[in-house]
Length: 181
Image (cartoon, rainbow, N blue to C red):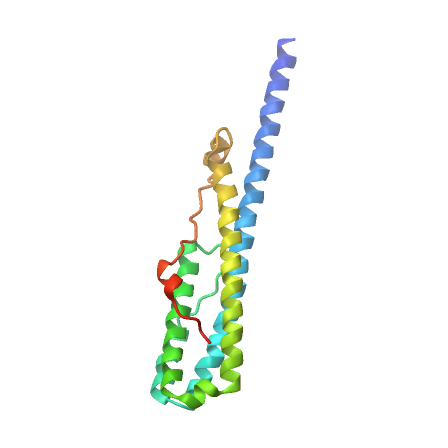
């Protein structure tokens, strides 16, 4: 009888550890997927910004070269990227868009250009998509972190090397940023 109870307890513990590990993987994958979605949206924004940089070439060669140097900082954001990686890319895009807007102010023909206006509209749409993706990512991280930190799943998480993830932080300076159109 003792052996049956012992085997049942061990079987229960093994089943529980397997279940906890699967949940950890599921939540971790949701976070990775959410970060990949941010990467897709940032990539679209980079493409739109690249088109704007090309438009500046006809107006100011020096500014075009400067903007081109900034676009060289583009990096791919994927499922293994950190919140800091995504934030750095978002900051680089924001810096670049600000510079492009300054060039457009200096050249009214550029600002009146149909392609420029359409691309700026697309850039706004991509920015909204990034905001949505950031919210989804932070929601996924909340679920993952909660599971990793709650007892008894925290025992399995710690033993298997599942660590909490960082949230994407809101940039307070963007709350006052003018629209890019």
